[in-house]
Image 1 (tube, rainbow, N blue to C red):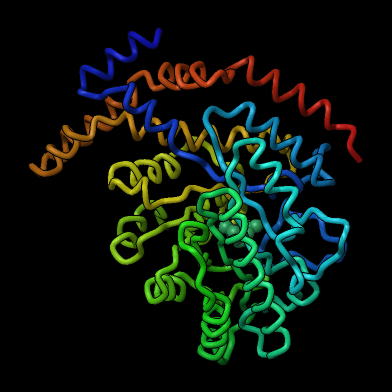
Image 2 (image 1 turned 180 degrees about the horizontal axis):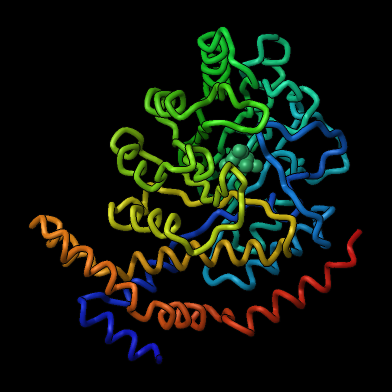
Length: 412
Ligand code: RNT
Ligand code: ZN
């Protein structure tokens, strides 16, 4: 079907495909650097990952250096329509120096900032509270030992400072997201103590004021991880309260809830009390497994909530998955494009008749409409979006992804 025919099919339902295409082009997806190397980073000293972060598989082609990672990222962006962001973790520093986490400085990340500026890509940032000997107990900011806590508080402060400086350099907000693995494998006795310590550590990290146009602080909650089954200190309730009290953004990771919960449903509830929301779009398969996102019902539901509830301006969309069993660059491309496709479908939804049916309690019509709309020609509109942004689809895309993978497969 041609774009013109598809445009008319949507116009019959009062949907303006040009408006949908224009809006989609303005939505950046923050692509996570850690899909490119199985969340390893470029530090010399290593500890266990902790908190259930586990990339499985050993497909050839893992990026081993910042230069390789940047080459892979450039390729991935070249296959994704629109302009997007890069979400950097502190353990991805690019320097000859070997600073510990409590000694990181802006200059350790300067090559990333220069590269991002040249690419027209904006950066986001994350302190790294895992994969370090001082996090091997799965305790960081809530550690009972004051010295260990202070080490991690210093890391958190420096990362905010670095993020704010990146924000100033790029002349645009950096989202700095705090996730800690802290928790307990078996039933703890003093949950309150652990949560009080986490709160105090966060307060210390967030005390310094930074220009809000350069830095947006976010905190990420979690239900459980492998090794911390009995209690995660930074639970949903903990961080929801914390974000409201301290006016930070709240990060909702789709893998961080009970598998039967609908994370999309949380957006509007959270949005009543929290101004900014960060998403870690992910696909938990039975647990927080971080599979590459599909264009499935959970992603569609998320995109619909963002669009239908008019939360586009208040929601930063980041991805969080890591699959080492397939081409890592293809994983990025598939994931970002799926998120965009879901957003496009939501933007192409004939919302008015749906709302009207719902208001009249006519749930039969609402269900008939949602199911009929699934047969509208979304694919032709997506094709048009890719064509306008000079990006391939179908066989052309598959060949490009395979050719790049072949080129990196010889990496050790
Ligand atoms: C872990 C969290 C966190 C990490 C990244 C690497 O469960 O989801 O966001 O995946 O920081
Ligand atoms: Zn996450």
